[in-house]
Every structure is written in structure tokens, then in C-alpha cells.
Image (cartoon, rainbow, N blue to C red; front, side):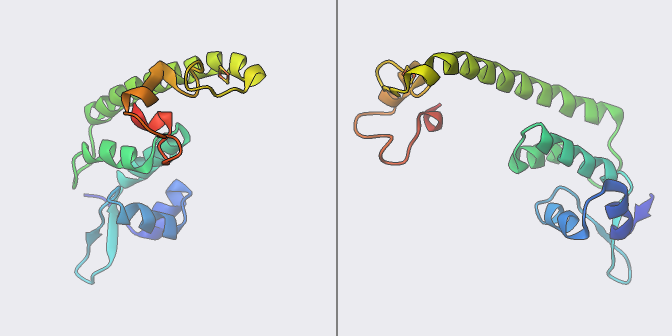
Length: 150
Ligand code: FES
């Protein structure tokens, strides 16, 4: 098993040591303790952290990234099949997000010129009348936006 110190992990990923500790605290990487109680990381953690940085660029939240990485084996290098399973899962999420963004973009054209933000008419502000499905009352004034209902 090939282990590396945090400095090398930082150098290989471009992350600061504090950023690596941040990811470690959230369970994205799990160092192994040496007999002298020093942290050592699997060489494959370079890929885990690189994946986390790329996934953040793609718009995944830290909790989504953590959940994806939790599907990988701990204590050994993930196989190509392990990474492909994550890739397939993320692709479907990204496809759904792209469809949502395209729909929002198409609705936005009409709404920029309108600006009414009507709960009755505006599909951008209240798509599929989700405010009504959430129940009566001033849902938006209570801090719940239409995006919170779906
Ligand atoms: S802002 Fe008027 S329809 Fe969306």
C-alpha cells in the first residue's frame, strides 16, 4: 500500500493543507495513522480530492460529493469500475440539472420583460403552481421559496 504525507497530497492536488484537512473533516479522505501518530494518505486520495474539486466545479454540493465518495471503498484504491459507477450516477444528475437550467433559461426570456412574479401566471416564480401544493397562506413571506417545495 502506497502512503503519502499531507504535504505531498497538497502538492499533487494543488490544495492547501488546510483545505485537505477541511475535506478530511467531512470524510472525503480518511488518513491512516502511523506508529508515530502521523497522518498518511493513500496515493489514491489524490484522485478522490481531484474528483471533489471537479465535482464542485460542476455544481455538486459538498454533501452530494461526500455521498458519491462514500460509495467508494475505503482503505484501497478504487477500481476503474468503482469510478465508472460514480460517473454514471453524476451524469444522470447533471443531465437533470441541465434540463432544469434550460427550462429556466427559456422561461427567463419572457419574465425579464415582464417582472410581475405573479403566483398565478409566472412559471418561473411558481412553476407548476407548487406554492399552492404546499398549502395555503403566505408561503413566500414565511421564507419558503417555490424551489423549496419541489
Ligand atoms: S415575471 Fe411575469 S410571467 Fe414571470
